[in-house]
Length: 343
Image 1: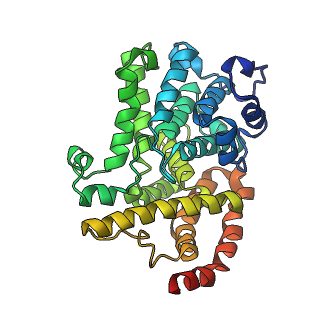
Image 2: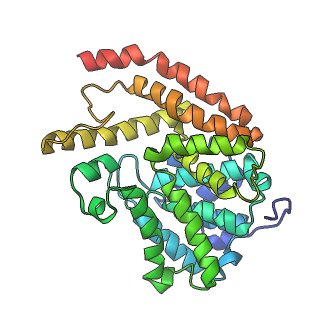
């Protein structure tokens, strides 16, 4: 089990994290209300790398892999560089998802509840950091409908998620300077790969409803065991829920992410129209009401998801009410956005 109760003096200076960002991370590394956009600015565009180094030092995770921190920095840098400058699926989103997992692991006590060891914790962070590596700014539906090379490679099945996971390991195995897995035994490496891959694949929304229902059923089962047989399933949900967690954040940050994700969707919709493809859900800028879209997202995706999270992480309870608070604000804006569409 992770040594979560042990306090230690940590020399973060050796990680060479920019001071303004370090000051934020020391205080807010497990805070739901950290501002990822400020962190990206203070991190010189490399906040994901700095966050990963910080978390690995804070949780004593380097020792799991027995390679020098420089190798980790090289690996994290490659991961960060793999993120394209999309409006939404970019390095800031990766930082945000990774930091949110730490909030759930630390502040909401998932480490204690599932008795995560250092290897488990490292897998969660690695999966979160790489979960959208190389994202092209288009959805799986677009990749399939446009007959992309990736869709053919992965047979139309979780196209992007399979790609993200594959790349997370390829960049390590193809460059010894980045190979954080180099010193692991065969069986340890295999277990880590299985765990990370499972978490990244869990972010495919196509499987959201079925997987959430299965997790809910497992939690209600008499043989439910968060420390053993159900641990990986819960880890999968931790990464998945962090990926859709914008509505539980401060409204200011949530609103910024909303503008970005719909902006990215609408660029896809424009492309679909140009190519004569079916316009995907929420991707038509001429018909999508921003506020109504968020009401549906909260009601049908985010609230049911975090209700399940709350069932095994009772410490999340004070934050669950953010969904209703943010929903009220979006509900008040439905008419405003409809008028914008009608102009």
